[in-house]
Image (cartoon, rainbow, N blue to C red; front, side, top):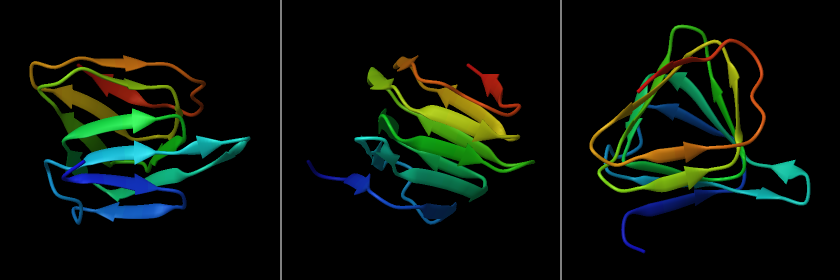
Length: 102
C-alpha cells in the first residue's frame, strides 16, 4: 500500500513520520515491535498488535478519516489522541498512565 510503514523494531518517533503515514506495529509470537514516541508525533493511522510507548509529556495523535483496529498495548506516561472522523478500535493490554483524548 502506498504511504504505509511497517516496523518490526523500535522506532524513535520525533516528528519524523509523515502526518499521513499508516503505521503498522507488528507483534509476532510474543516478540513485539515497539513504536517509541520520544517527541510528540502525528500519524495518519495506527494498526497492528505490537507496543506503543509514549514518553512523559509527549503525545501520539492519530489523525485518521478511516476506521482501523489496534490490538497492541500502550505504555508510558504520555497522551494518545484520536482526531478525524474515522474510528479506532483499541484492544490489548496497556500499562502505565496513558491519557486518552478522543
